[in-house]
Each structure stands twice: as C-alpha cells, then as structure tokens.
Image 1: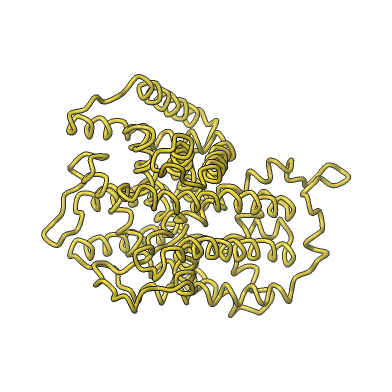
Image 2: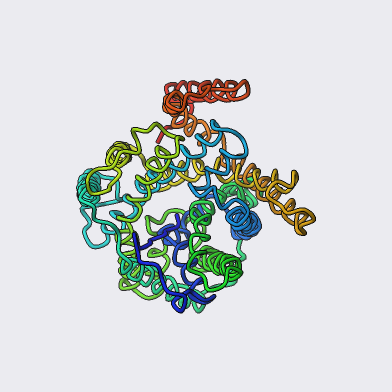
Length: 491
C-alpha cells in the first residue's frame, strides 16, 4: 500500500520555492513505496514461479501506467472533480456507482490500516518475541492501544508534520537499496531458473498450476503495493512547470516498478519458492538474514516499523477523511461531515477506528492475517480504479471536456480502454472467494447510500441501480451462506 504524508495547512510556497522535476520524482517515489514492499519476496512467490512473476509485473506495469495517465489527464480535464477518484465514477456513471466507489475506497483504506498494524507487530516480534506473527492476543491489545491513542490525539487537533515524511522515506529506502545491492551480489542464476515456470516434476508433484493461475495469484499483491498511484497529481500545485508533473509521475512509477520487480525476482535467486512462501512478515528480512547475518534481519524489521509506524498518524487521518469528505459532498450522509471544535472529523473518526478495532479482533482468528486483509483491501479499491478508467474512456469517445479539434483523443481512447480492461482483469484475477467476501462488506453500504439520497431529496435508485443493488445483496447472502457451510473461509 502506498503512503502519502503531507503537511496540513502549510503556507503557500513562493514561486522560487516551486518544485522542479527531480524533487517531484522523489515525492512520487516516496509516496508510492509503502510497507508492502517489505513482504514482496513471500507474497509474490506464494503461488507463482519466477517466469509468472515477470509476466505479472509486465501486466501490472502496463495497466498501472495507463491508470496513472488516466488520473493525470482527468486532473487537468476535470479540475472541478477534486473529491477523490470516486468523484469520476459518480460523474460518469451516476450516484450509486459513485457511492460504491467511495465506499470501496474507504474499506480499502481502513483494512489497509489493519494489515499494517499486523505487519508492525510481526516485525516487532523480531525484537520482542511476545508479539509472534502480529495477530496474537498481545499484538491485538498493543495495536488497539495504539489505534485509540492516535484517535484521541487526532480529536485534539494534532495533525501530521512534514518531518514525518523525511523520517519514513529514509527508513524505508535505505534498507531496501541495501537489500537490493547485496541481493544482486548473492544472486544465483541456477536457482532463479530452476523450475522457472513452476511446473510439476516427473512424478507430477510440486507444481504451482497453470501460468495463467500463477499470474492471477500475483495481481492483488501488485495492486496492494501500487495503491495510492492516483495521489501522484496531488503535487501539481507545487510544480514549477505543470508538464513536470506528468514526467515525474511516469518516471516515479517506472522507478517504483523497478524496485518492486527487483525485490521479488532477486529473492527467487536466493531462496527456493517453498522457502520464500513460508517466510513470516516481513519476508525481506528472511531473505536478507542468510546473506549478511542477524543484523540484516534487524535492519529490515526496524525499517518496516519506523516506516509504517511513523506514517500511521497520516493513514489514520486519511481513513477518517474519506467518509468526512463524502459526507460534505453528499455522497455519504451529512452525519459523517461533523467536526469537533478542533476541526477533527469526529463522527467519521469514531466509525473508522471502531471498524479498525473490530477487524483487529477478527485478525486473531486468521492464519495469514496480513495477506487476508490486504487482499480484501486490494479488491475493495477496484471499483474507483475501474470506473476512473471507464470515465476517461467515455470522455475521449464523446469529446466531453475536449476543445474543438483538440488532438490526442485517439491516444486517450487507448489509455482509457487499456486502463478499463486492466481493471476488469483485476476483478477477474481476484477470484470468486474475495469478490464474495467484499460483497458482504459492500451490501451494508446500501443503507448508508439510501439515507444520503433521502437527505439530498433525490430518487434512491434508478432502474439499473436497483438491479445492481439487488445483485449486490444476493452476492452477500450467497457469501454468508457459503461461509456458514464452510465452502469458503471468511478469514
């Protein structure tokens, strides 16, 4: 999951302090690389061979690059739609689609926080074994204390500071680059190419499935580490030249893609697939320790703790900000837009942290809590991604937002089409189990949407929206039945 830590209410910068290309690239890279990179060696290798991992990164590279182009273009073409990526879904496909995109964006944000709480305490267990895999009772109690401590700090009006960005960026980039340097030196070509496509041996044992299935298994992992790509355009107002924002987005994205691909692929030349798949969070530490000793594992664990822990205040604010903004623009009920005397989104904060607390408790019953919650978070964020691409495609096809005779519509049609197809592919790759479990989380949102529409005085559902709502409830009921019968596991 990506991280974006910004200064709140910072004074406007004078013209001579505007950002040039190099610092813009650094900001984009710093915001996209989050804690997810520290567990890529295990996450990518659980169900995929090196060959399939390469294909997975190629698919992700093309798809996410097109999505970055989509957000770059929409930010310029529709500057009035600045309430988040779900605003594009709402503008292009109606209020119910827009609501579900916002609802999914919120689910993804707070479940991402749950996943990172587990990751922090799993990393802490290297220094304090009491915390185990990060989702045992001591971890849940400690994480809960942290959640509510930050909750009350935010209620008092304490916001994130710029120096946090410096600390977290250094803490994650230094150990990552050191890992890559050592991994390049220690890389074994024969180990990397051994069973390159993950096929069964002569006795029919040990295969990872078809290449398509292996590639599909990597998709939610790659989405997780690129969540936040839509936030790159946030730096537009700080740029010395508007054109540098597009260049920084592309170059920063390519840099992050290179780091992610190297971390996952170099690891397959150091440990075997079963060894990688069995590593605990953060798996980068498990790869690094055999190469340099215990200090290497300590460094990676410490890097994750400082990176994720340092940014947790910003993520708490982000999670609460989503329903707060939605409450103000009418996407959610007005109740979510309440502020206290310190300007903190009080109702949104209570609901968000209450849900985080609930899912922290549920993490106790999960065998792979970190992976489970970030898989659900990755699926939940797909609606705003899919419909953002579809909206860009719609604008390019209809000419809306384009000047008469403006060039580039053909290119934008291709960009929008590829981004939309990639989003639909991600939905398919997610698999039925995670889609059904997401339906359980999306279905209650219908009641919230209905209240918001009543407040707006509008019709709750159109004909097509009624069908979508019925289908969503039916899927949620099916998921509940399958969980009850044990056909699918909820955790």
